[in-house]
Image (cartoon, rainbow, N blue to C red; front, side, top):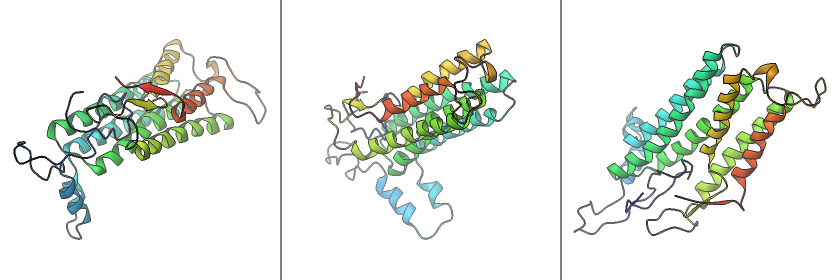
Length: 254
């Protein structure tokens, strides 16, 4: 994007097509922008620190923050269908079908923040939490619904989710020191962005279309009947988790 506002790439995750600005540069009196140039952050801090007003938190939310929360709502709908009968393919299709909406809202919140020239420190935290649910928890829940549910499967899916959590936390800590281009946008991703997990969701959708679920999952089961029983397809999540937290993988941003 060509916005002159510095990007805060709150998590750097939406293939970084759109990130909210974390800070707004001070503008000169002739710039046509308020001299404070804080993008509404000071007002938000004041509302959040207020000792009165039951709904001060709601008032502190920016429009982009509400769009971020729609991200979570769409994926919550996805996880709700994971609780249905796995033999009912309609529920599985619904669970997988809601996931791209998370990516859409993750893209739009940054667009809206730059359009309104309002940054939000709380929004940055909301975005990281939303990405973890949308692209970490939801795909793992869908895999469990499809039949990846032995004890070892459980541990490996948990490893994947924790990798996503760690990747998001690392970005929030290091975003200020990563090399930037002239617009203030980071030049590359460290590790694969967490929304790329949707590639695994697409693969799971193909399995559902072929009826490859539960006892018919591709590659079957290893060490069946033992405490170490697991489904080899879960290793896709392990591999993706390792790629997310990799320090050596640097993917140039578009």
